[in-house]
Image (cartoon, rainbow, N blue to C red):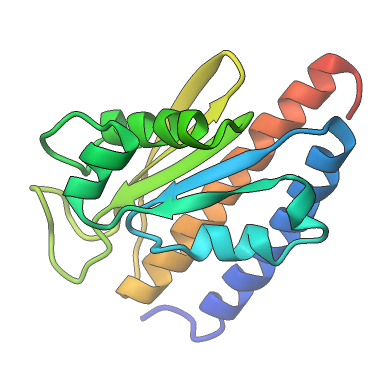
Length: 172
């Protein structure tokens, strides 16, 4: 059974990561947009609550329904719990919102498997100028814990991309 304090700790970590994303994007005049399925807007909420979000957070799309992924974000029709879908969601939201960075999450939150993937399977993607990277995760816990963990990890990969770009430019 998961530690009952784990969700609170995950939320605190997510808020700290979002605050650093804010500081770094304000430093570089970068912008970010999010495309969420599994996390249902939680990533956008964390980013929107970070300092001076209006200066760098373009917004987000909560595309829980597959049709929204297809019609709004330009995802190819077919299975949506895939790395390919996460990549297309991140690329689509960047294009839609004219942002520099995009982060996207799709997966099976549980308690049951979906599309042949066990509960806790999550695909995340981060679009950054020049390319998009995907990650696959297998989280444990109840659906709420999977969502919070996926949120924290999506923010972490976004921060890693922003840090890498700023370090490469010599502004980090």
